Image (cartoon, rainbow, N blue to C red; front, side, top):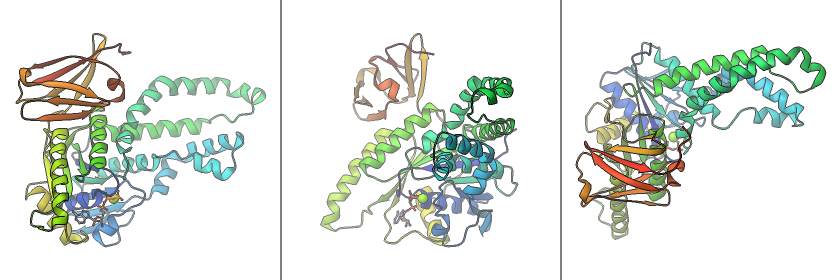
Length: 395
Ligand SMILES: Nc1ncnc2c1ncn2[C@@H]1O[C@H](COP(=O)(O)OP(=O)(O)OP(=O)(O)O)[C@@H](O)[C@H]1O
Ligand SMILES: [Mg+2]
């Protein structure tokens, strides 16, 4: 049984304001009466900076009903990866790697973030918290990382158990024939336990009634592109995305000619954000004349973003994009409630799918495998757009 908890993850390119927006959200959530925990999965923690206080590796009280935690990554890695790490180090050393290098290599990139996600499940069981806000690491790969449980599941089901059996059978003879170290039962047990914990978080993270992801962007081209990519990828893996937060919009009241041009550029990017993420709600926050540090400023920021609404509400429930194989080709499906087929044009431009209607446009980055295929049919029925891509599916 999954604990009754609400989880909100904030993701986006480096420096866009993820930590500030996540922290602001946690403040408002606690003010609305929800016991709230904010944690970062980023090894370079910055919650302490955002709140301007010392947030420890165990839940630290920030204010009434609000706690923060900066996970001790080394402790997490030791706990979940200890035996596996020892084996990999031994194995790599055997392959001729220097022991320091072997030790480094035995931790894979992104793994620290995965281990902090494991802590989410642990805190979800804590009765003090009914909302957990997660400030993700500044990388385009957070999305990929979130998909790791699916990949782990594939590996465990298809490879692991067989491998374990083989090793068990050959271990008594292997020593005499090969001198490569073989994983011990303890290593296999650790993998099994780690896998179970990963599955535990996965169940929580893909449960759209509990967990949603909010994307933080700035009105800048590269930032939006990266968010579009994450959006498609996360949709593919069925994660619930329920809002986009546009941070650092120039305030209307600035009248300087230097900023007029910038305001124009931002307005264009804002239109593109609507085209790219519709029908998700787009929340906005302006560029402040100071850094947003400390409880009071974060609280003010949250009021601007959420307009006094409860930030823990699921802001959008519908699945934005659905991709599935059907009769030897791929179908991409999305809700389009206010459109008519005869007004619609669709085309693919490199990896981008453009859907144009009389009065609006949608831009979606296609998953790699679809971008290479030809779009041969588009159908609009029951308020749903269905796009058919040619080619074999290997499903
Ligand atoms: N709307 C804003 N107006 C003014 N300053 C802002 C705004 N949003 C964020 N900042 C400031 O910008 C800096 C970076 O913000 P923040 O740390 O939230 O970004 P981040 O996306 O978490 O960065 P990283 O990718 O490094 O984790 C902080 O000093 C923060 O106070
Ligand atoms: Mg940050």
